[in-house]
Length: 229
Image (cartoon, rainbow, N blue to C red; front, side, top):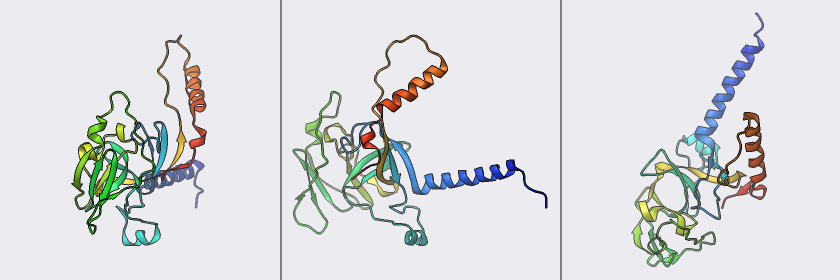
């Protein structure tokens, strides 16, 4: 039998690596970059996060659920989901209301009445921030909402930065089949680039080096492998 060439072996290994990478990205873990401040201070603009896509088991067979640690979506999970009004966009928010819950907001405080309960209970939310930057949604409207019932198979989600977040208060609940996974950790974080200043033209290599060095200098090392809770 003739020996296979190195080219053939490397090509075969490359195909296997691509298949594994596609499988991991599709079913297990995916990276996302955070572009907005709606989850500050839990997740910052410029954070790059890893999302566990199998934990909620949307594509798992019964055998897969036995092998992998699958869990139910629960209150206070930080999730990535397809925006219901534009499914091609991914949003990140925190689960506040589960199916069957009544959710109301008074003075920025969230209260929950579970299906089996008779009274609302104030939700403990140590992660909440209230900032009101210029151009943000009307905070008085966002922080005062009448009771709303979370439909079956859907979830009420809010941003941690309550005065600067468009979420279920504005566009409603998220269907379960839109949820892509749970945010695990920040694997890299970098301060957003400042507005470019006028400068003399530079060579291509110098431009690449400037970009790489600037990204390194702006890296927030203290957030590397920061666990999201």
